[in-house]
Length: 127
Image 1: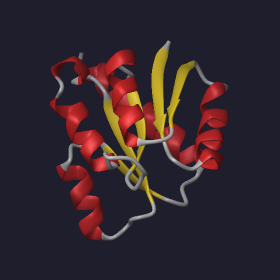
Image 2: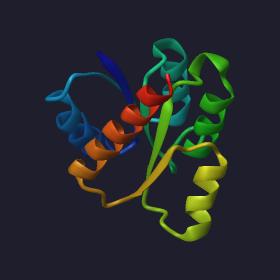
Image 3: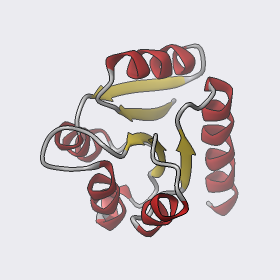
Image 4: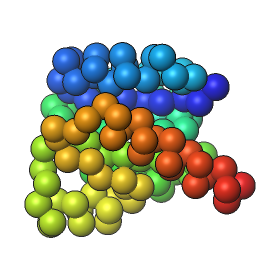
């Protein structure tokens, strides 16, 4: 079973993502801020992290992404940034932080699922 970590400060969006993923074959974890999200990533080693950029706490989504990508134990983890920040510079900042994909809010749940499956399929081809 694939593990997905949702790191999002808005409870409604977390719930929507959880409901989208729970009918698939995923073990789902949730965090409401970057600090908790990074702790959970380290302890659960998820296959995919759905990560908001702007959150309360000491770590932004970009910082969490950098930490995940710098951790050898999490090198397999795919990071999908979910953010309202859709400018080219914002997207570039996300990719520079190591994001595997960058989805701009409002996103569709189908778009999220397709992205998760596409990244997983690409990962499995390389293993």
